[in-house]
Length: 182
Image (cartoon, rainbow, N blue to C red; front, side):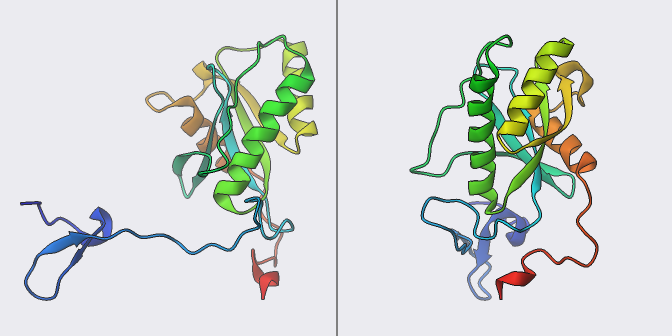
């Protein structure tokens, strides 16, 4: 028999007063464009973490200090193969466009800022090329960091997302996100 625990946290809902619990699948209702892009491109942009230290780029977001890796939605899967560090800016731009699209589809809002984590510290020319490529992809780079500079004990992509949340510019005063959707 399954231990009861906290129903709100475990995904189980009670059946009346008998004390039995059953799993419940929950899907949040979300309105979006057919291609999965954000419904309100004027909404404040999200700051994301992008880890390009492995063979495939990973994307994460943090809200309230809780970071989560973002995956492509079913039907929109794409490979974010990381080119060599000395690759042309155009190749890096493709990776950053893919990372931005993954975040925007998952969050249903624009992604405008990023912390980019690389395996090791990079030279000035590589840093400039990566920053320029991210800018061409629509992402303002908040910081370019080596894996050793990030918080240890958690995956680099999550640490980059936490740092992105901390470094993100504050929303404009008096602007309520989504208020113009009425």
